[in-house]
Image (cartoon, rainbow, N blue to C red):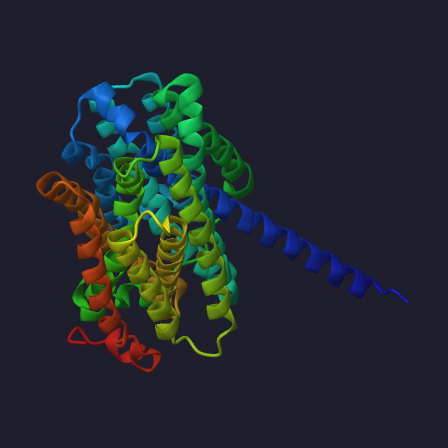
Length: 410
């Protein structure tokens, strides 16, 4: 016999499930909008270079500038969030991304491309800085799973735009190919406004927030360096991989297809590795991180020694490593603290300086290409960084987290 209490309980469970699913879908929609500004231009670089007259070193700034913004805005994200509020900050950021893409579609000049890289990069940066703390607070124990879905959607947006943009460009020119991505930003903005505009953030734990000053902690700086190096390959790959394969004789569409193929495995890694992390009885992520780094290393070595004969394999393996490192890197920072807002602050600090390191990667790769006449030196430099970070991974023992997050000397 059904009682009123059991009916109410089922209704509450159903409502909670709908809220969970709706929240996850919106987080994934946010992720989908965070990479088209970067990845859509990559397979069209030769067309852009011909139309604008920009060289490789300047073209690298199309990726470098957004990553610099990601770093700078992430460091100021706490103040920005207090000024605007979480929901308003995210909505403003989506608007900035949409406007940047629309301007690229309307005006195909080098100055427009560079200025919109700054505008869109600022929007991307604030969303990326706010999402980790938001997810840890709203989803609690399900944080690794939701962060995996967010990371997967972020990478899916990059792969989708790399695959679709060259085809759109064949129909309406490169400006349409890089600019059409204002449409999903507008749709996501409308969804966020309808669902989250009235939801107030949970009250802050002032003691926890005030007690954590990341810039005073040696561990926070180590996390920033670690996150920057293990993800540096993404910014170089998304900028130069299609160009590298075009130099080896493939078309722009084929280069974009390879980047999209790589993204499939980034998404798989972003889904599977956090899911494994969620099922772990411990927060020790070292063996997952080591496996991810080794996958990156194998991919870079493949680009150097056998780029043509096993191209799909190297792209798949490198993509898996890149996808896993991004999501696991975020989870690693969030694991260090139990308070959601304090952990979000640490993750924002890590991303801030980490993305500044990422910003240097495509620029250095472009300079190495101009200096040596090949991208081989760029892949070799990334491989050396990965080997170094494999050694650093050994330091992330969860048993020491309470100690290293209290002592500036750890």
